[in-house]
Amino acid sequence: QVQLVESGGGSVHAGGSLVLSCAASGFPFSQYGMTWYRQLPGRDRGLAASITARGDRTEYADAVKGRFTITRDNTRNTVDLHMNNLKPEDTGVYYCKTEIGYPRVAYYGQGTQVTVSP
Image (cartoon, rainbow, N blue to C red):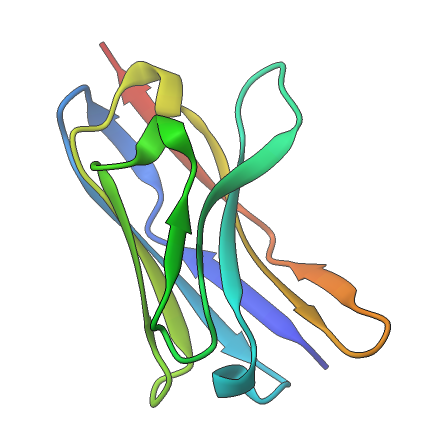
């Protein structure tokens, strides 16, 4: 079955950096785009960054452009989110997501907490 396991969350001060990693299994990873979503306190879950199956295109939420970078390794079935210059408003739970099948079914990992203090 599809499994997405996030790791790398933690607590940092503003201006710090974290790298989140998502290990995927149970589906042909190199054939599907991957997305990092985040749920900020009091807000709906929203997209942070996405990457195509081949890794040739990426997209970012305006709030993270220039600070976050999404990468993937199709040999290791992992997708990472490199987060620099973190701000307190980045605090939230970060989820790895993919959509598989026809019709598309969304799969999320369990989430990893990121806390940024002033």
